[in-house]
Image 1 (tube, rainbow, N blue to C red):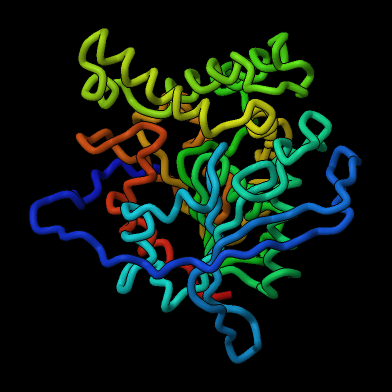
Image 2 (tube, rainbow, N blue to C red):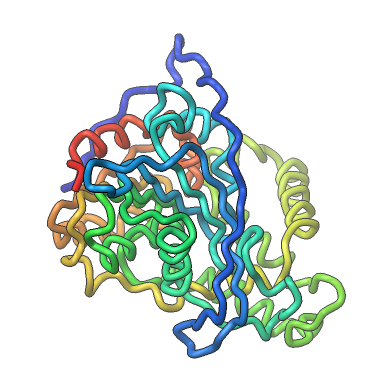
Length: 355
């Protein structure tokens, strides 16, 4: 079901800042001889994670308050600790108040402080896909943290795509699902094109040297430029970059930061990990209530494709909301402004019974 009603304006006068959330506890979970869907085996796969709060069990002994929160391509769980996300969701009195919920924020394979190509294996690191990443998340929860049930799975961008797959692969493991800024369909068309541009730029760069470079190859700059281009909307970019000189300065600054922080092999693996994403054939297996949130100005998942509206009809308890463009929209990054959509999260939790 598509919902085009405008949400209430969370930025209206009188809305004060949320209290600071508690500091997360960080940890690592090691998976010995982890076998990827490619058949490759990594002797020790490290999954880094953050948690807030404490798990609670119901009268059956089942964990009733765990929430899995999944990041986007190139990100990590640290991204969710920004004030505009964590402050609006994890603080006292907020929808995912850490005094009530046990929040788990893992770094996906190839991301953050989890095992990744730049640790030393470079392009010899096993090829991984989204299903490998989810398998590691599942083992972190069940074996590492002793979590046998989730109140909610919430994910943004790549993490949103993982959320669709979580609902199909483990349909009885959660009470509710909230995928954001993504589509429940195989990567194709323009979404495939920009990913191929990045992949081809790196793989065809002579200075990539098959992954054995000693300094970041020039193709990482191309990747950073493409990612910058896809991440926002034209209106916001015009505000930030009103002249030719300002445009060059803003782009150069963003690329400079990426060149200092990112790694070409990591970026290549992160972008190519979507190769096995195709939830379409399994959408009817999703049992938990699911609310998909997309934004009308998202360049990566444009609403005119009609994919979300078509596919949500196949989800037994699925609902989709397209959030209209506003002065506060940020394109694909609109999800970072949690104040603008947290009322939808509350409605989802209110409508999703504990199972």
